Length: 110
Length: 125
Image 1: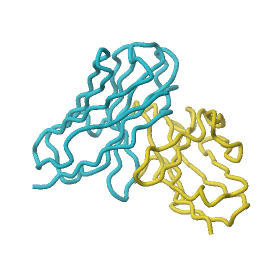
Image 2 (image 1 turned 30 degrees about the horizontal axis):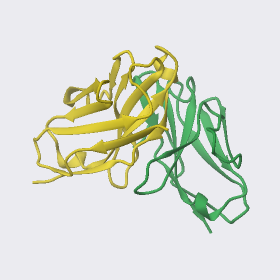
Image 3 (image 1 turned 90 degrees about the vertical axis):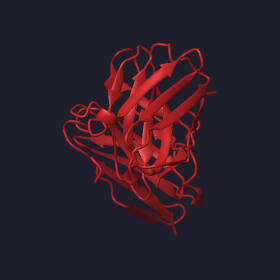
């Protein structure tokens, strides 16, 4: 069981907007930045969003992040087939003294 | 360009010690604001952090695995080594190392921005 809670799956059709949620507690998402990763099996996880809503260079602006209280969200607009992947949220946990991850959300593009 | 590559045995026996090496390029682990972390993902399960090491040699371990883990760095070789003792079949996973970026000693503000592709370790007799 993961410290951060994500829905196990999400889906959408090409061009749609999809949102993935990430819920934690005061010791992690409630008091620290949330980061998002995209992961395809056999590849290196890719940083999509850091510090709640910042995009690294090279990440399309179709990807956006937000945080409110102890919950965070990743939004993907203009859904494309290549967005089909696993998405993970992460945040520092003040009690554990390290980063914690969500269980991951598998996104299917129908 | 930052790159990291994990290496080590693909198969270990129960009770053995696992030694994994992360060889990196494009940064120095003696530069302020830099760190390297180890994370694993058992088949069908979530990512789990194992250990972190920072530019100033600060080290953090997952509380649930702390007694079994040791992380060290060799800045001259651009390597970070993770050892995990008393391996068990439940430790079967893909192990990743990742570059961390942050600011000074504000360790809670660091995040993993570049990951290696991972190495799969199976624990079986």
